[in-house]
Image (cartoon, rainbow, N blue to C red; front, side, top):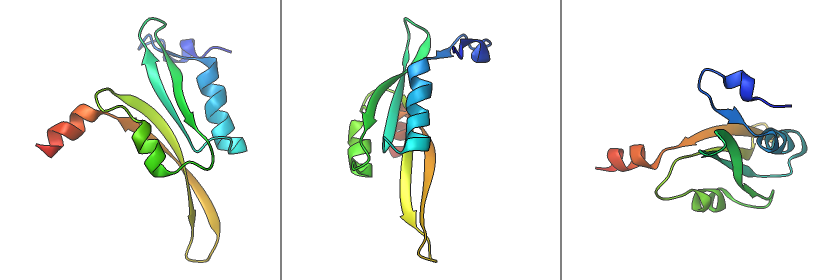
Amino acid sequence: MSLRGANASSGMGVAEHSKSTYLELQRKKVFRYVIFKIDEKKKEVVVEKTGGPAESYDDFTASLPENDCRYAVYDFDFVTSENCQKSKIFFIAWDVFIFLHLAL
């Protein structure tokens, strides 16, 4: 199944592997994070890197490029004040140029 038609106005598609990798993170907890990049030649979003369930937030941030933009999802585990184990999936748009501008 191709998602290319879903984003026809932008001309950018989503690789099937990107979708299935996200679903593995979401449903099976196979990954702690997934980093995506845009493949300019194929005009689609592809998986660049995955992090195993034991990897930390520091491992995730170390995997982000210092000079390029990426999209990522991160599965954050936490314990509530009622002592319940929970997790939330965060979508992250990594734009190093914005961060550099804000730091100035």
